[in-house]
Amino acid sequence: MKRPYTLGLDIGTSSVGFAAIDAQYVPMRAKGKTVIGVRLFREGDTAAERRQFRTT
Image (tube, rainbow, N blue to C red; front, side, top):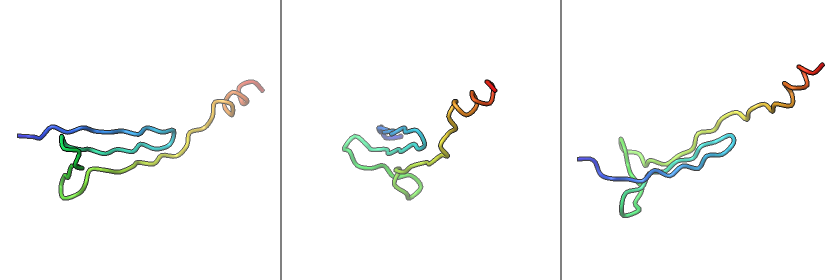
């Protein structure tokens, strides 16, 4: 039977952080690793650049 857990997310403009904890607030482990981390993304282009191209 699977244990209940809580997944926490920190969603930013160019990254997503995550962590999973069990009912006793202990970090969960999956496949021998602690379930905690971050994913980084390239920052998106602003709409102003595209808008300038369309207006000229």
